[in-house]
Length: 553
Image (cartoon, rainbow, N blue to C red; front, side, top):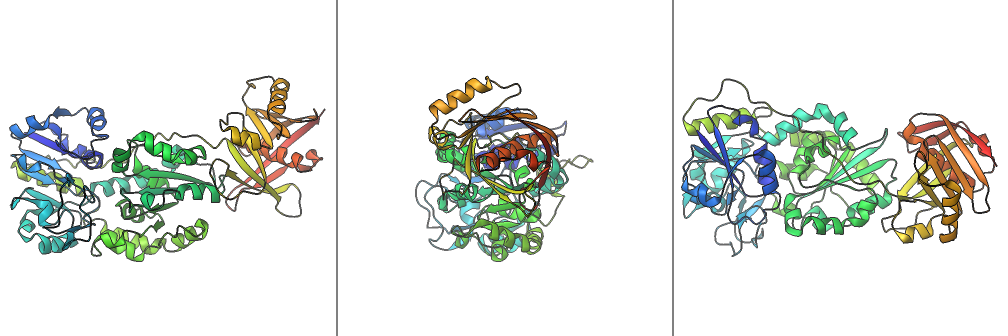
């Protein structure tokens, strides 16, 4: 039996990839093709190559007959396929409203929400994917089977395309089922994001077009990086595949260059976004399906509601947007995170109720429908629901940090520490600027109070390197050279202080401990030995204890 996968875009490719376990049948031969006029081909070729599919050109695919065809989008020239088509949802359910017949304009291309020049608002508005406009070609229903993630969609389909109802079936949501199967792996995903103890992850998810979260507020992540202390928060950004396809990888990274230098984690197109949702402590999103998935997974959500009017209020996303807190781009983010945390139980309950009518059973339901179309019995075994793989998270840590150290209480050894990336533009932070020798931004190195070099053993001679720093950086008052648990502080007048870290909670904390001791020396603390044992408080969730020894010369 021959089965064809039709791939419109990278988004559709990820949906179809969730179905791979149902093709483990010796009776099946799987093929795939890419639609001829796809508006968003970026990433499709690499997906096909990575999966190792038997690829057919569109011209070949329309000439052949298959026992069944599966797609996750409609439109383009799908009507040219001469085999029964099973259509699964493009996202979670059918959330977006779509202009009715008669409001279409030239240039539509593939029928994805927002594709081409067809804007919500003109004519009658129907759910995208459930309307006659998206299900029919020249009056003929294109799909032989229409997968619905939730039973509420039968009523909406009946209202917009009643003759399609007999072809509809409950398919559940394979994407959500994989998320649910992956939740027990949250610790592994957080490790993949290199989160330190007590550090919180904020995942920012944006769909595409100008009314998306990133389209409305492209500087949001930069402001968050400027506002939130680095040791307490990390920020990950995931953009819809169509955003990458529309603008190019170079352009996306160029727009985000400042934030990337400040430590933003940007998930590449090919990486597993669901791990970023599960690992997150909060998810900031918009009118994309990620909002429903995040809330259904129990993550607190803050939603940009700029495009709320484009969402069907009867859909799962529409119901979630009605109860979720709205993201205020002009207000401080931390109080909003607390509000989202307080509403988590409510948003979770709504999303969990409407995300799927068949949680955990999607692959079985879709497989049963596929084999019904092919008129053969399905395998006796249950298809495997696979947890998502841990992503390979790249990016760099900020090379320059504004560092503010304050006494936490009466004991001078207990200090409150907050650090912010210096790469992002924003209000000037109190404290001193500590820059790494790896910093490439000449402006930041010229402003730095302290410049540090790290390497075990040191990459350069400490005295020679420090002399070069003081010669070329007239504003620098102190150098810091770290080699594992040892460090040397050198003042501009030639005084050298040798530090040995004898005990700490984690060897990875050595750099922070030495940076704080350098800051204390620079701000007037002459008796460094009296600070041992040192206790550093990084917000309310994390403290570091360090015993160290000081040699003066």
